[in-house]
Length: 340
Image 1 (cartoon, rainbow, N blue to C red):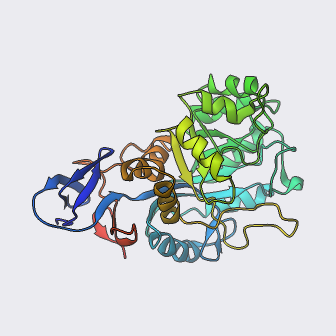
Image 2: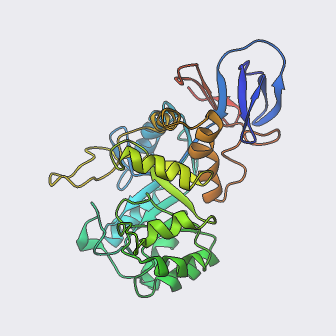
């Protein structure tokens, strides 16, 4: 199947010509002929709390299917259902209910955003369910199902031991909801942690002599930063600063929620922008098409340790979006099959 596009982002570079799909894989790129639109990798979202009225903390397979169909309509072809801090029984049930396949987008595994978070940086997470690092509790949560990522605060007593346990099981650790100093953050980075959750949000503020987790992450070229790019969670000047300071290591996340994005007290509880809208925002802020594709696909796949996803290359997974000249979504392909 030749997508017949005018250009495609192949191995991170915008290449003129059509794109071939053979089975569930990308075939040749740069095919001759006339076409329209641009092929980019399917979006990979590492933080989706809920979507289209479906809250993942407490839904069933039917709910996942409804949310999956809605996510596909925004270009998301792979994602991590995310569970915020909650009582143990609720988290165990949510992890156990994770689907393996059959909902449209690929489910990369669950993202436990808590409960091992700073009491000073909880944001919208319920304080009553927050816990200090607890190996036994973590073991019970991991036994429940397919956990792919855990967000925790590195400065908490026992946090570094949990990092070791999680890495031994092949689970990605991300730092977030943290009051860590730069020194405390660096201790975790030296243990192999290589990403942070929604940079700047729910973490120690950046100051010129106290840069905190955010400053430590931006200064360390080994660290990929996850960023909510909706024009609400961060000022535009902050977005531009991060785009320049962390070029090539930004993974846009939506932090999408099923309902209201603010609590009654005004605290942000999640994002309302889609990945497609974030892609367009990146371009409006000066990113090139291939840079926007990296920030919405390949960097997230790298964080998730899924080198098979997030990049269009011959022999790679055929998760492809076709965008028109206005960056509107024309076509969604997952594993070589039209999904819309």
